[in-house]
Amino acid sequence: MEFNQQLNASCNSVNDYNSAFACSDNETFSFPALVELLDESLNNITQTEEIRKRFSEFSQVKIKELTRKLKTAQIKAERPPESSEEAHHKELDNIISQQINISTSLESRVNQIMNDTEKLRNYNVEEESIPPTDITSMLLYIYRNLGIELIEQGNCLKARVQSPTKNDIYTVMIDDKLSEHFVANHLWELAE
Image 1 (cartoon, helix red, strand yellow):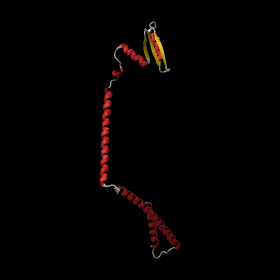
Image 2 (cartoon, one colour):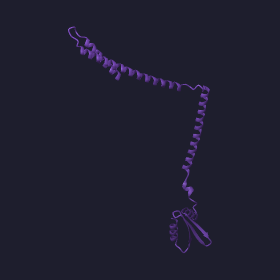
Image 3 (spheres, one colour):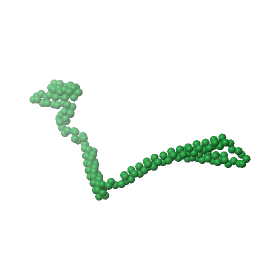
């Protein structure tokens, strides 16, 4: 774009030069004006030559760059000389068989996960975690989960209490003389 503008400016100067010489016979030429016009024309010609030279250099650089890109693309497009068409087909077959194996293993894994998910959905946590309905076994279950283990030694009943916060184990004698409320509160305090 810049090149075209400068070229047009040079042409306009040449047209000015031609119009300066297109005088009628009775007009006189002034020598300094003519010299100035010639200098201006010479400058325009020099600028035009410089612009053409820069444009030519720019074009050469672009041509070299595009030539390199073309050669690179041609090299990439060619099949390597050491590989034959048979080897190419063999490689494609290997890739396809690998894809089939991977697809099969993924399908089996998805089916396994779906089966596991269905089992988990159907799994009833409450049925599994609740012990039998016998009251004694339920109480033992609750005590054990709280960290309280009841131990019978002859006529005497003891409770072993584990305190996770204090990292201690307490053994308490449970006497029939004590109220159930007191024993429950005492065990609860030790279990905390």
